Amino acid sequence: MSLTAALEAMLLMATDPVPTDELAAALSAPSAEVEAELEAIAGFYDEHERGLRLRRIAGGWRFATDPSVADVIEGWLVSDQRARLTQAALETLAVVAYLQPVSRGRIAAVRGVNVDGVVKTLLVRGLIQEAGEDPVTGAMTFGTTALFLQKLGLNSLRELPDLAPLLPDAVALEAELGQLAAESTAAAAEAQPKENDD
Image 1 (cartoon, helix red, strand yellow):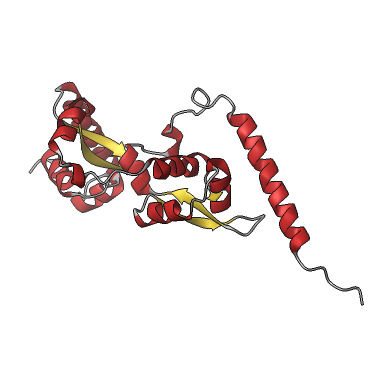
Image 2 (tube, one colour; image 1 turned 180 degrees about the horizontal axis):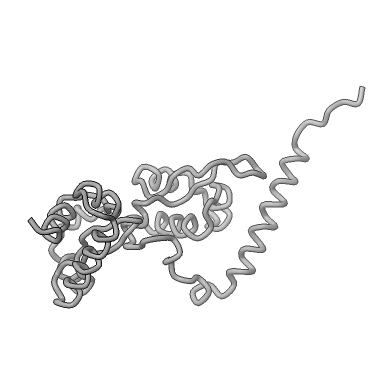
């Protein structure tokens, strides 16, 4: 069996993106050789305009459908199989993606509404995860997951589109959020009971 055939078969069976090193180990082949073969396979599918594409996603490789057939696939899928996110969930996910690690309070400040339910939904769906405590407030922060990258077809967060063209006041918003965080921290400090000097 050729290396190409083995890689295609393995990737067709994989449910998640598979890193080059993992594929190389399974085939007892050098990583550089497997990487070159994966690039060649990806090039073949692109060049021949097939319905499949081999893409590097979330730090690994996986097969995906060609974007040009998206309308056909969408029309074919039954609506209840798509399980779309609500607008609120998409907005919250965008805030987490661009500001991570970000606390629930900061997400709520950006969106202007309570986000407890939406954050829970995104956690359950595996699109976000806990990312440790905020060093200033001690609040739990959240970040996106590898599944988030996979669903968006991204290899890393660096591939997220620039917000500047879509949100010209992004710098002003960031400054305002910083101010809100500082005020919130100060208010919390004042609310703590003061120790007696006795």
